[in-house]
Length: 87
Image (tube, rainbow, N blue to C red; front, side, top):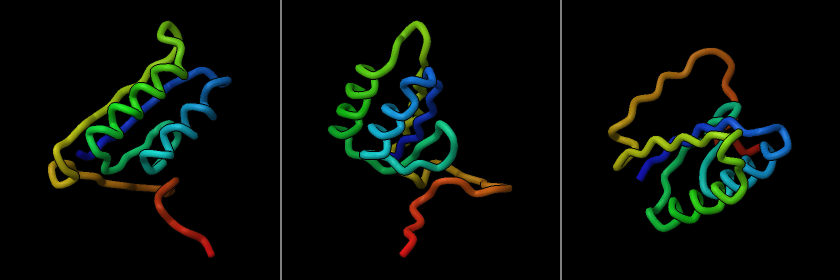
């Protein structure tokens, strides 16, 4: 499945949430990650993130698609994140 994760968390938890999410998805922009992920890893990701947030203060939004083919992405301006590898 293809997943887009959008999060808004307290400053003290941003690093922990980002670090956890990057183990499963690709960072594309501030507070946004995306990528292909198995159902099992998606469940693990959600469980790990739910342990790191404060429900009354933070929010997580997951957009899920069967495959990336059902999504369309248009990107303008400064490109952030991505899978670029620098050598």
